[in-house]
Length: 146
Picture 1: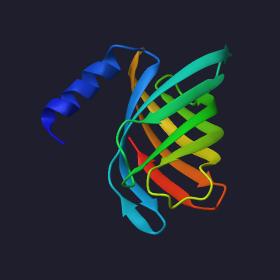
Picture 2 (picture 1 turned 90 degrees about the vertical axis):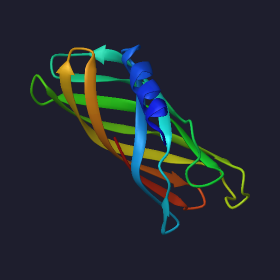
Picture 3 (picture 1 turned 30 degrees about the vertical axis):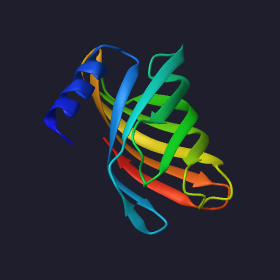
Picture 4 (picture 1 turned 120 degrees about the vertical axis):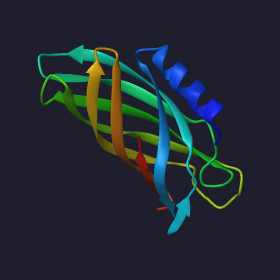
């Protein structure tokens, strides 16, 4: 990946408050390491309370990882504000794999995720996720995402 692509992604992420860009730091599929993938997502927080927010979200793979596969998800999200600048969250939803290899017999499954946010300013934060896509044929993609 070159620096121009990374700069474009960062600038694009700054332009929308609810849209987020993610990069897979470390992934594993069928006991093989997967290459880094870029993800684009959107979270819509519908219910807001003092320390707990919840809503729905969606994430799409921009690049393929593992090769010839893209993992997309639709999920519910619950945020818990630990402090003013720290936030813990969980995600639960549906996973869909665009499989161009024909390896998978079932392309849908369960999406699970947990993570932490650190807010630098009101509209800018950094997230660290641990994500699992568990497909119906029991193939699992584990991701560590920034």
